[in-house]
Image (cartoon, rainbow, N blue to C red; front, side):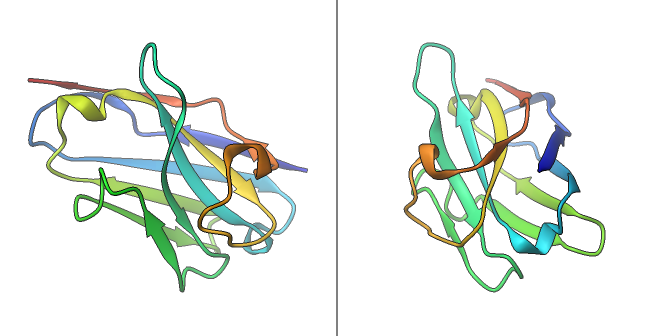
Length: 124
């Protein structure tokens, strides 16, 4: 079992920066690839980014490429999502999720563990 807890969300203005963190406990964190997803009001949950078990590979949604950076610190069991140049359309609840292998196109249903989410609101 792996427990995931997100933090770092908040209310910011467009153009500002936020850094989200996903803290893991339980099984060896380096055994899992970790992804970030988000769900805006009235919309389906969507993929944001994924990072491989040791951080050598990552993939981003086109909508965040160049603005968001995913990173991980296996020694501290955390995966961060640095978000710069935030836009109002980035407003959503952000979730981290873990799966046993790095598969950059894996759908949400193939992630084994999920956090509870953290709210990000970007005002214009």
